[in-house]
Image (cartoon, rainbow, N blue to C red; front, top):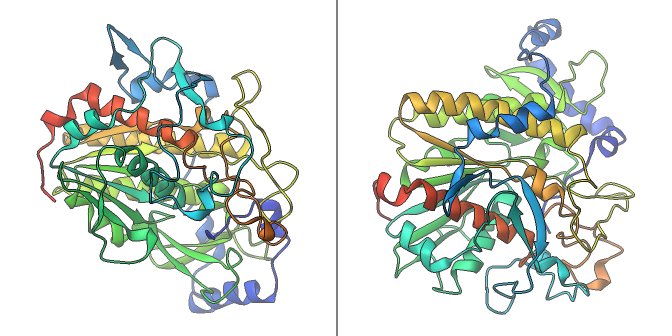
Length: 427
C-alpha cells in the first residue's frame, strides 16, 4: 500500500510527545539561530492574482498547440463520452499495481473509463502508440516526482505495450526507481522517485507511515534525480500531496520552522512555502546544469477528491461521472498549489529561454478537478481489507482518466517537432 497522505485537520490532531521531541532536537542543534530571524527567511509574495489572470496568461506560458488548421488551448474544454475506451485492460498490461487495478477488484461501475477530453476550440486526438514511438525513437523520458508521477508512467507503459512490450532494465527492485526499455524503438522510460524534489529526510523512519516529520532542505535539490537527468531527452517534473504532511524546514542547513507543528515559539510556515521553494530549487538545479539539453515538462497538481472526511477518517470518492465546468471551482488549497506552481514555472521558463532550454506546461489541475470518478476508492485491494485500509482518492485507476495525460503529452511533443530539435543521447 502506498504511503498515504493526510490533510491539515488530521495532522493538527496528532501532535504528541514524539513529534515534540523531533522538533526539540533540531532546536538544540541550532540553538544559536533565532526563531525571529528565521521568519525573515520566508520568501515574500506579492499580491495574489485572480484566477482569471492565470487563465489569460496560459497562452503566454504554453504556446498554443496547432491541431489541424488552427491554434488551440488544449487545456480549456470538457469531458465528453468516449465509447471506444479503454485502450488496454489489466490483462493486456503487466505493470498495473494492485492498488490502481480497479478492474481486478471488481469495481462495478466502469463508465469512468469511457470519457475523453475535448478542448473548446479543437479536437485532442486519442494517444497513438505508433506515432509516439516514431517521435521518441532512440530517446528517453524520465518522470521525476511521487507516486502520482509513477501512476502516470505506468499509464504510458500500458498504452505503449499494446504495440511493444518493454523489458524491465531496472537496477533496483524498488518500484520507485524503475526503468523500462522498448528494444524495437530504443526508447527508455524511468521513474526517479522524489516526492519533495529537494533533499529530504524522514526524522522518524521507524514511525507509523504518514505520521512522522520530514525534514526538507528547501535550497538543496534532491541529488538522486539531479545526477541522472543528463541521460534523458525529456523529463516530466511534478509534486504535490506529500506537502500536506508535517514538515520541518531547513535553509543553509539551519533550522527555520515547520508546517503543521503548532508548537509554541516555532515559526509555522504556510502550505505553499515549501511547495514554492521546492519547485524554485528544482528549476534552478535544471537551469544551472549546462550538460542537460532536453525538454522539461512541468505537470501541475492533480487534486484529490475526498468527501465526508480525509484519508484516514472515512473519506471516500463515490462519484460515477465527471463534473462539468459549472459544477466545480478551483479554490482553496488546490488553487494555492496551482498558482504557486504557475508562478515558479513562469519565472523558470523565462530563464530557460535565455539559454535555449525548453520548459513546457502539462496543465492538468483544472481538468482533473473535474474527474472525481476516476480514483480507486476501495477497489484497490481485496474487500476484506475495506475496514482496515482507507479509500484512495489520490491516485487513479488504470485504465482511467490519467491515460488522457498522454494524449496531451503526445500532442505537445508532436506539435513542437521535438523529434528533430532534440539530439538523441542514446540509451
